[in-house]
Length: 143
Image (tube, rainbow, N blue to C red; front, side, top):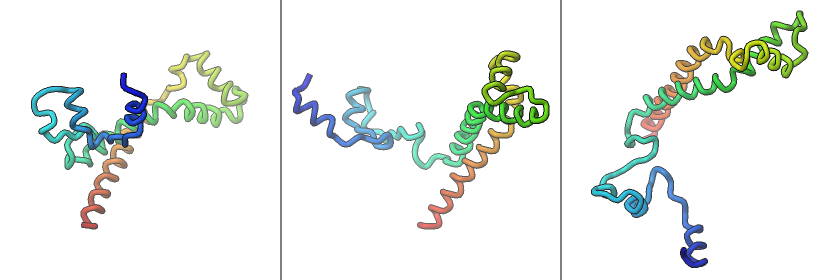
């Protein structure tokens, strides 16, 4: 353990970002030949100048799938309530969720999910990939 002054000093140091790791600290944590002599880039686990458009496409597809899986139960309940407008089977949002879970289990809230996932993954992949491509072109034009 260090003194109080040493501990206070260690807490006031500027934080190190992931794209610029502290070579001395890496050498302490991971001793071995050539770690500090090689350029290591930890951001996105790939060297800079890699294909950012491809990364955007992959990240977008994954993000789109996760987004739909999280938001789908609310979309399902909304649709059920819209369809139930004239019948009056449900008393509200909570009642719709409760009846669905009692009748079909939690999986009932995800009935029909696959259709949206199949559309959302490519949509988000194209959106993210296009953003990266247009961003790169805009930066190149400014140079």
